[in-house]
Each structure stands twice: as C-alpha cells, then as structure tokens.
Image (cartoon, rainbow, N blue to C red):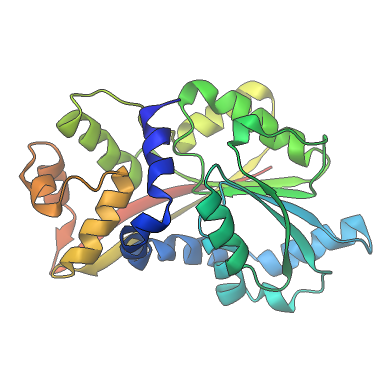
Length: 276
C-alpha cells in the first residue's frame, strides 16, 4: 500500500470535513467542466436505447463525495433524459465517501450496490455494468498497479462503455504534488498517477479509446486564505503544513508564486477525457 493512498484514505473522514469543504469551494468546478464538456444527456439516452427497457447499471469508481453525478444534474440536465432510473453503484475504499456519495444522488440516478474497496480489489461478473466511470479518481493508484486497476475497470464494463477523466502531468494537481514530495518528503513517496500513464497503460492493454482535452483554472481571491489553504492541503492529503509553510518552502513556494495573478489564485488544470 503506497503512502499516498494511505494518506488519501485517512482524509476521507468526517473529521476532515472542514478541509474537504474548503477543497470543494475551489474543486467543484472540476466537475462542472466535465459536465459541460460533453452532451451527457444524449449519451445516456443512447446507452438506454442499447439495453432496451431495462435499467442501466452504472459503476462510479472512487466515487468520493458524489460531485460528478451532482454536477451532471445541475449543469447537464440529465434529470430530463429519456431513461429509466439508472442503478448507480458506488466503489470507494472509504465508508465515509460511500455514504456521502449515496446521499448526493438524485434522479435519474438511483442508489445501487456499494463496494467498500479499491478498484484493484473489485470482484464482479464480467460486464456486470453497462457504464463505468472514474472522474478524478485514480491519482492514488500507484503506477505499478494501474494495469491491474484498469483491467478490473474493463472487466466490469465489458460490452458496455467506460469514461475516465484524469489530470495530466502539466496540471496543478500533479505538479504541486511532485513539488511537495521533493520539498517536504525528500523526494520519497508515490507520485500521483497521470493521464499520460493511463493512456500508455490502455494502449499496452490493447484497449480502444477516444480522448478529449479540456483546460481550465481553479480560482479564488488572493485573500481567501482558509479556502486556499484547505484546497492545497487536500491536494496533498497533508493538513500538517499550512499555507505559510508551503510558501516558505524552496520548492512549493516558487511554484505557488506563479499561481497568484492580479489579486487571484489561479491553479491551471489540463485534463484528459477517455471514452472507452
């Protein structure tokens, strides 16, 4: 088990809700951009037509707090889609996340099965799900375990469709975490997996897929100290270092200085959307 994965699990708890709320004050936009990047309503209606009159079965991998289905309802008008209630199953190693995500579901999504485990541990029937997706979900999967994780993902949706949204090496999430490992951990620790790693692994596995790129910024006023600090701590899964410590560090400090422009914090994200 990698240190990155272990710390991520420790932060998905009720105790860390204030930090999580600060994080999503900036990071909820991640899911709005995903919801607006594609015609999800038509996509879901096409999937429904493919399976006929029965319910679609969907698996949300590393579901977190259920921000993606909530964003689809808010920004992609999927609640008006011509589909039967979608059986929405949740997978996450955190029981807290499973509860949070379940409570966030709204029509057309209807709570289905719960899998309290990692993707690598998923055991289900081949093709059990018509749809599987993982949105900003695979960062803590070590590079050496990506193929196993993606094999389980493909196994779950064989005969159906899959969607993965993941930040690239040039995105804030990955750049800042690398600076953190070098600046605070002596270069030790598992870096976040990147979209480039996922693409390389899928090609190695012989999986057919299409990609789309989106770019945007997480932003906040420069004086929104607590929100920015909580956001950055959550990016690192480390609440033991505050914003002053981050800015004083010889590696994270210079990077953060590049993120302040015209009185605002701007964290650049480059995200790859994989359609399988």
